[in-house]
Each structure stands twice: as C-alpha cells, then as structure tokens.
Image (cartoon, rainbow, N blue to C red):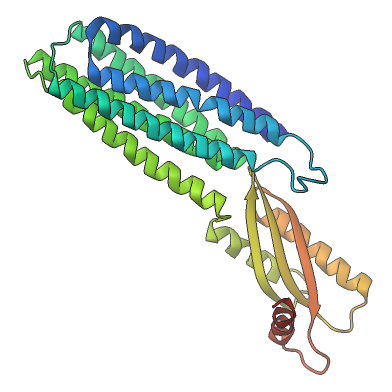
Length: 304
C-alpha cells in the first residue's frame, strides 16, 4: 500500500506539471498556428492523461485479495499499460495527420518567439516529469510508471525539435514546421515501440534473468539445500512472486524439511528486490543415492 500511495502521489504531481505545460502550449498554438507545436501539445496532453488509468490501477491494486481474485488486483497496472500504449498510438496518428495536412496546405506561422519559448517550457516540464516518474517507478517496481516516464522524456526532446521548426520558419522555409511535425510523429512511434515491448513482457510474465540468477545463488547458499530445480517468477503489479523446487536430505523429518524451506524462503526475500512472497517445494534424494538431480528428475516426471 505504501508503494501504491507513492505511485499515486507521483502521478498527480506529474499530471499537474504536464497539465500546466500543455495549457501554455495550447494558447501559443492558437496564436501562432504552428503545427509542430500542435503535435508536441497533443503528445504532452496524451502523456498527462495517461496518469488517469495508472492512478486508477494503483488505487485498485490496494484492494486485498479475495476468493475470486486470489492474487489480488495488482494486474490492473498491466491493463493500464495497455491503455497507455493505445493513447500513445492515437497521439502519433493525430500528430501525423495534422503534419501531412499542413504539408498539403501550407501556411505561415506567427509569434515565433512565443513558439520557441513554449518549446523550451515543454522540454523543461517533460524532463522533470520523466525523471520523477522513472525514479519512482524503479523504486516501487512499476513497469507501467517507468514506461510512462520514458514517454515523457521523449516528449521533452520532441519539444526541442519544435525549435527547429521555428528557426526554419524564421528563415522563410514554410515546410520546416510540418516536417518537424512529422519528425515528432516518428519520435512518438519510437516511444510506442519501447512502451509496447515493456507492457508485452509484463503481460507475458517476463522478468529480468538476473533476478533468477540472484534467486538461484541465494538458494544454493542455504544450509540443507542439496540442489535446486526450476525457479519461476512473475510480476503482480509492482511486486514479485516466486516458486522454486529444492532438494533436501531423505532422512529429514517433515519438521526439519519445513525449516529448510522456511530458511530458503527468507533467503529469497532478502536476495531479490521487490519479492514479496515465495512458494518452496521440497523433494528429497532417493534412498541410497546422494544425487540431487535424481530427485528433481523424479519430481519433473510426476509433474508431467
């Protein structure tokens, strides 16, 4: 719940900063007619609005598990990630349409100094929000929040690109503004690719292989663990859960084997960041052999 509160706080502060930046840019778009700045404003507005589904997901994720949702409601963040990717795609399509229309129907832009100022304001606001979201997302283990932060960072660089359009317009190049608008669209598509990849991996229960390595090293260091089998992990919201197979000596009592499993669970919880629960399955080496792989092979045959 503490991590959810921190995530919600980050989102509302980000929404306020980006909302103010977008409002300023929208006024200057109306005055100047800059299509590059319009594309940047659309992107910033979309980025601000992504705080809403994430905020709902963080609040929903606080709900306790019940008999229907036995793992809780942490997966709501993955649904929010899908909405974020959809929003980014829609903003790219709108920015591209406006830029192409301006290429076909060119027009002069005015108030170039204001356009340049709006571009710098957009960069400053987005970079601040990007650092804030990425830092919090990595701290609480939220892939959706990190993806949203990367989205904001690219928004900042696209804001700087608006300066190129303003500079070209000042030199009399009428196509400079819509061309920069198309470049901004390309930047949005790159963000879309990265964000979609992160959300896809989370939906497919992908984890960093380094986390699995850390878990296996921790299990091997537990007294009484003679071998380890499969180690599985998955994200539920911004928390990790793990399952692992371990081999213990055949002469141990049920109580003693349970104590080894508890020690192994504690070792995992200390070794793997953001891991909140682990389920350990204990097996034993067959009587008359000390080969732990034989036990794991026997367990695998039973599982199949």
